[in-house]
Image (cartoon, rainbow, N blue to C red; front, side):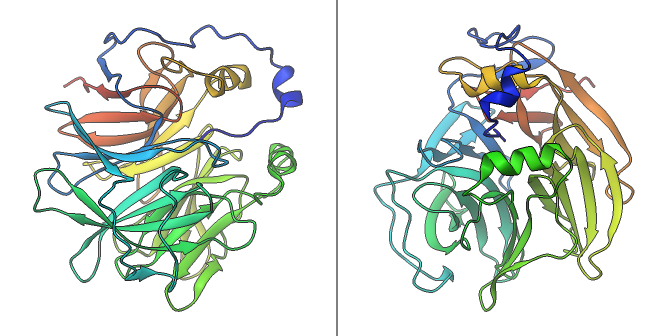
Length: 352
């Protein structure tokens, strides 16, 4: 996640970078980059295990558009999924009357894939383009390439500023609200001094958006749920903490200290994989200003126990061939890494 850090804070750290930009596309340290993307901030793997759906990030404030793509790592095939000229206005999920997003403005951020109770595979997408919303897509699984059909949306409450989303099987979702969209600079300063700026929203078709008790934090970022949908795992970005929250009691039942935790995903071995940022604000600024190549910002991929949140760093890296990882997704025993800044998705060939 790229924070909109104010210049006064960044200036205290200088403006140079040792590791950004990365202009070549050469594998190193078991990291194999594919340099045909644009800010692939979030990734989800399809149920067949063969494809990744990619959220190609534009800008958090909606000033630049992005898109959704499908990526087949084994063959290298990439297909644009949305916006598409074939998109239809079919409103069966989400808030009644919510119209399709403006294709020219569409700016995706966090995404999640879930099979609904009715058997349909559903993709949820945080969108900043032209509005603050969560978009609903049905995913066709009987095609050569995963196909998306827009099926509705839920417009965020006044001053909402979303980041990541996790779907429920009943068709609802949980979404992190980072801070008031009207006051990002003030909110970030507040968070740096230990103040809470946001929380998690729960959305139901009949009730709309409601704050989830016990989820307040300093720039809530990535979010996941337990398989039984009893617990939420919320990444408190500027609080440098991952929290496990019991939805029945609103109690925080486990905590993990993780440096600036971004997005999370479930690994094949049942661990919660968290992308952690470990570099300086100066390096973050260099990545935010990137116009070509990739960001070298230092990161870790941390594996946490689902019950206790005890864990360790599976991967620690800085510089070429890729930095600033925002998500790690299991894929055929390896990890696929996305980033908020740069032109690549990188496959980490996990040492066997």
